[in-house]
Image (cartoon, rainbow, N blue to C red; front, side):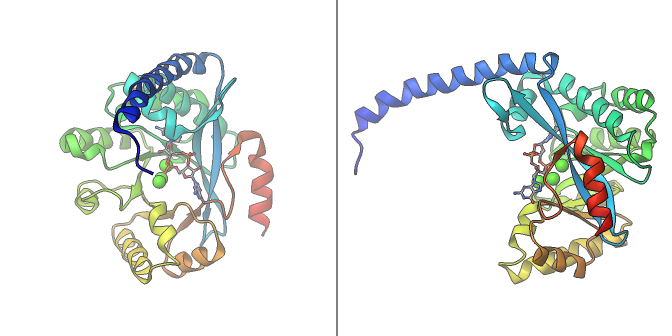
Length: 275
Ligand code: C2E
Ligand code: CA
Ligand code: CA
Ligand code: CA
């Protein structure tokens, strides 16, 4: 049925106001979230295929809002980036992730997402250094996940920051690999420790013949450059089998586990490392 033009306009504007108001309300709440202890890290395992055990966990931020319930990071991280709140939130994430990981077995790394806004801020190095010092975590056990959107604005500054992070001894992974428009050129500029193959390629694995060839190309390239590979979003054993056959190093996804609270990590390790 065709809508009456005037009618839909009448509804359009108040709806926009409501949306703006809702955003504003969430922004106010996000200010308090950190202080009120509403932010929490969950941890999702990365399973190493050659080691046949969990080699790392990725820290994933959760906002447990008293009224809204669990708010997705896809909703509040963009807001945190626009308002600058990502700086204190990101600092908390790094410190908390290091603190939790320091209690794990030494062979298990912790991967932490770093927002481009956070990456460009002058304080990232000292925050990482402080997180390591306070927790006593070996720098080699901390892996920072960045996305290639960082390279769009200022390649030189990004490379300089990456190299200075490297001097701290931490690892750097390129997240969502393959979704940007010129990923390959960055690989020759900086020696990432790991490529995380975006979930969109994994979803395609069973539907498109070409997807397997792409995975093969990525793992071959990564091998040649001395980089590890992790496939994200692996949900079933068919995908796992293909990824194994194509030489992918680590598997992350619901097939092994959803992200879990810190308190459940020991039990999950026992379960996954025994199978
Ligand atoms: P990401 O870094 O690509 O993280 C992977 C996302 O895929 C996570 O969503 C994870 O829960 C989800 N996932 C894992 N396995 C599967 C699977 O098998 N199937 C499906 N459908 N999804 C799976 P989540 O936790 O909602 O996080 C979304 C995004 O929010 C992350 O994407 C990351 O970009 C951002 N994010 C999360 N935590 C942080 C953080 O502490 N700091 C920053 N800056 N960004 C974060
Ligand atoms: Ca990530
Ligand atoms: Ca990712
Ligand atoms: Ca992704």
